[in-house]
Length: 281
Length: 299
Ligand SMILES: Cc1ncc(C[n+]2csc(CCOP(=O)(O)OP(=O)(O)O)c2C)c(N)n1
Ligand code: SF4
Ligand SMILES: [Mg+2]
Image (cartoon, rainbow over all chains, first blue to last red; front, side, top):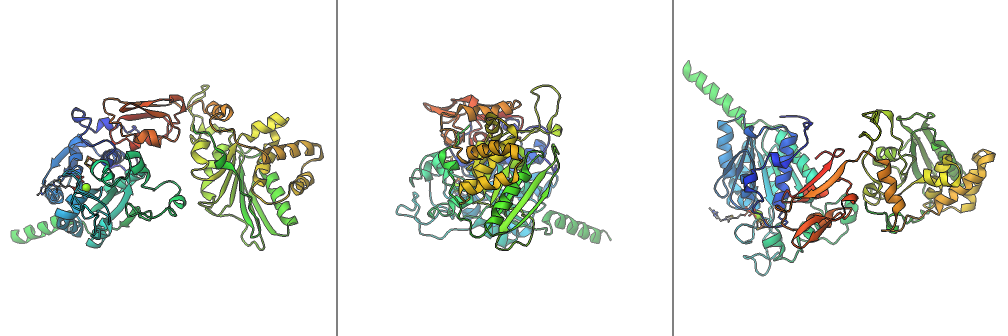
């Protein structure tokens, strides 16, 4: 893994499975922006495609991996972290990235998230948070903000939401950060830092589901949605805009946690060696 | 390039009662110190305590030359730290960018000459028009986005008045629009510090700077032409791959220079010449359909 970006310019086409392009995502879907930022970060870190494994769950976010020209796995709903754990323990030489959704990671896969964070195995988990189950037609997820309309909250959501970053941090993740797709270059830098971090890295990407969420909630077209992410270059200008339940203007972004904790893979291997040594005697 | 609009530069005069930190920067031999002296004298006459400190050097091309002017009821430190300058006055464009982080976030005022003095170490080849390492940021990318204020061709204005060396006074005049002091007092101060023979040209330059208005939006060939001329090395361009474009419109609405447009269900490049190579459209296209070419800004 390189510490500084390579001199060769980044061309996403070097990292895409061109035979599947254009991808299946709806016009304006933020997941495509996140995919580009991920590829740019992989390029920055100088990770060879053969040394990269991308493990995805189920959902629109889960389909992201299939477009990457690397070792990719489309696993079961909620379980990409479990698959990735097995993979990383068997092949510690690979850089393993998990791409998951808010439903995939926090609802059906919530348990896997907290335990992956607790173990601190060297994985990078990218959670594309569009506040909805996009793939299945727009049901409410654990991050759907109050009052938002979805096909399962026809008169407005009433549940409190998860703060995924706080959750991952509390569970013990070594690296935790968040960025909006509007700030794609910053997102790339954040992902690159997460990739370089040794231990469990959790990155929450605030993404726009333009079709089944934006439309239902009258959030405008793709440009209006991405503009309303507000994380503009002049924070003083958007801080006093009226706070809305969707992406409150105060939404913090950046790196929240970066700490050196014992990495699970190394620990496990040391432990195994110790046991083997014991039995040999 | 997006032309500067009136909103970008209309100064709100600052009722100076609590003092101010003003940073003046340039490349040397441009009159950084003259501006500082004028400010210091003005502040002194107004009864403020003043501290001024500088790194100077005539024609220290490529080096840094700056002057800190602080005035208030009481001033302790002679220098302005990062993020503490109320105003940044730059006599050269790359120097303006170099010191941008010293401006107070959110309310610092930025006043810069757009004139470029390319330092020797930024030249990578001796060929005419060869790419250089000079700053790529354009005034439109800075003014009104990273900082409020204005960028003007002060050297050009001074040259038109008869002496390019009065560019510093043009900037001083512009700066004065933000300070709530009468013009007559400024004229007095300038007359007190410039050589006798140059009083007239300096007074004219001051008035030209103070009265400067941005070229009217949309119809400002001067400004639009000024920067590309000075940047012969920007090999920039934007292209859209129609087969991958889904027509979401993000690039069209978010391009700061409005280069792109919708053509039915797809985006097209409408005004390729306006592209500054900032790559916003490229980063934000969810469909990998936009490619920007710019040797200066890494992909
Ligand atoms: C075990 C199981 N339960 C339910 C589903 C149906 N299902 C497919 S995708 C999905 C939700 C995906 O939401 P999210 O993770 O937020 O991804 P998005 O589509 O929003 O990117 C669900 C519930 C499934 N495929 N498998
Ligand atoms: S349904 Fe939503 S999340 Fe899924 S591809 Fe369409 S816009 Fe993206
Ligand atoms: Mg989702």
